[in-house]
Length: 202
Image (cartoon, rainbow, N blue to C red; front, side):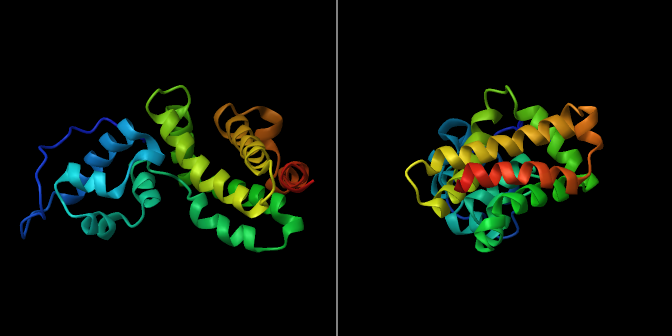
């Protein structure tokens, strides 16, 4: 379950002493504070490290990139920032259907679906988690797609595609509208994939 209520530890400067075992937890707590105050785009690994009283290298050691750290905080069920480069590297005339298939096949996995539904329910309408999730998706999903398109209205095209995917996830897995919840992945890909393709390239 997505959990943002983490007590902030006492801030300390410098590297943790040898044998100190709470560095990872302090980094997570500091990251929640930093993301909450600065948003996804404004938060930096350096600032998070300063809050936690550790070196930036230790944050990278435990979590990797900023996207990795944010994913750990929200317990993200899937990582579009990791999957999209491979999807976008394939034939351009099949990008829309491949995006839809990637998302739906991931969400058909019980654990991904459980965590994903919890994330959506928590994020929608929550004044803390909504802008954080929106910032993450804007940078790691919409931004990557828009960069590929390289046209004047690329951001709008990518956002329309993302909104279509978000709508499918909410209707199928959160609201569980019967016809959509019972449809096969192949059927949805065949019907929705061309719409994403049109948003992105037509």
